[in-house]
Length: 79
View 1 (cartoon, one colour):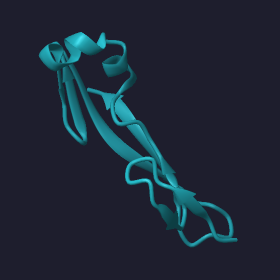
View 2 (tube, rainbow, N blue to C red):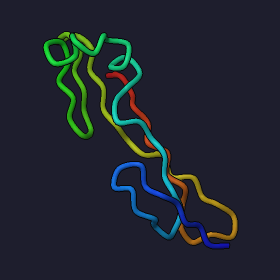
View 3 (cartoon, helix red, strand yellow):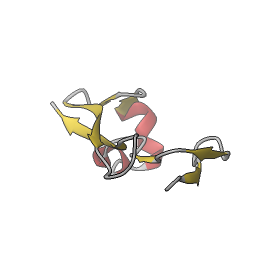
């Protein structure tokens, strides 16, 4: 079985196993949009909120029976 999907970032169709994840931790989205720039420092793999809450992003690779590629689930964890 071959997978193809439309990328939510670039809009192009890609072949292969899709991956899922959020661009920021849930806590980031709970900050009102107009306050985020002042209260949050969001990088591609890290996030600091109010100088007190620290998050990093990682990937959980889940093997899929019959597929060469693993399914990747992007997760944010607090430190």
